[in-house]
Length: 237
Image 1 (cartoon, one colour):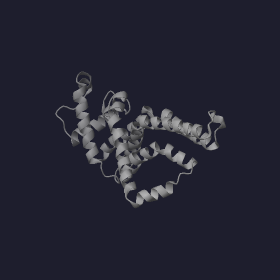
Image 2 (image 1 turned 120 degrees about the horizontal axis):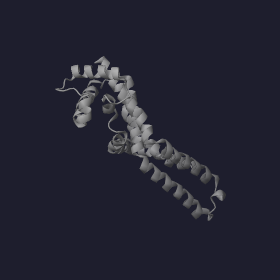
Image 3 (image 1 turned 45 degrees about the vertical axis):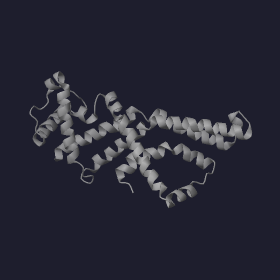
Image 4 (image 1 turned 180 degrees about the vertical axis):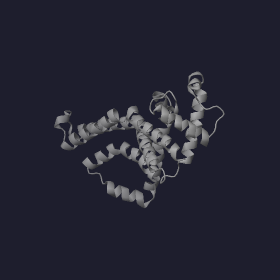
C-alpha cells in the first residue's frame, strides 16, 4: 500500500503517536483484532492509514522551518557555505567547482559574497541543492542517500507530532486514573489494580521518550547526515 519512504517516514511516526492507546488496549484486553477486522472489511482501515500518513507528514513539514531557523539554516545549504566547518575546505572547493560545471551561475559564491551578501550566496546554494535533489531521485542508485532521507523524514515528522503526543499521553494518564477512582472509589494510586499501575508506568515511559529523546538535536544529527550524503553525490554526477 505504501512505498518505503511513506511507510517509515510518515506512517510509523503516527503509529508511535497512538502507541499509548494500544498500551491501554492491551492492559484492559480491548478486542483490537476484532475492531481491526471490522475496519478492514469496510475499507475504513485503508482510509485511516492513508490519513494518518498525511498527518505525520503535514506536522513535520509545518514545523520544519522552525528547525532550520534554530540550526542556522537548511543543513544542505549550511554544508555548502565556505565558512561552514562540517566539510573540509578542500573537499568543499572541489564540490563548488563541480557544481559550477554542472549548474553554472554567473558569479559563484566566495567568502566575500557570503559575508557581504549572504542571501544571494544562499540562493545559489539553494539552486545547486535543488539540482542535486532532482538528479538523485533514483532510490536504487542512491540507496544510502534514500536511507538517510527516510531517517530524517521519520525523526522530523515524529518531532512535528511531539506536542500532540504529550497532550494525548497526559490526557490518557488522567483518564486512566479517573476511571479507577470512579470504578472502585479509591484515590490512593498504590491501592489501585495492577492494570492501572503497569499501564501508567508504560505511559510514563512513553512520555519520557517524547520529552527527552524526541528533540531538535535528535533530528539535527540525521538532517546533517542526509545533507552530507547529498553533497557526496556531486562526485558521481
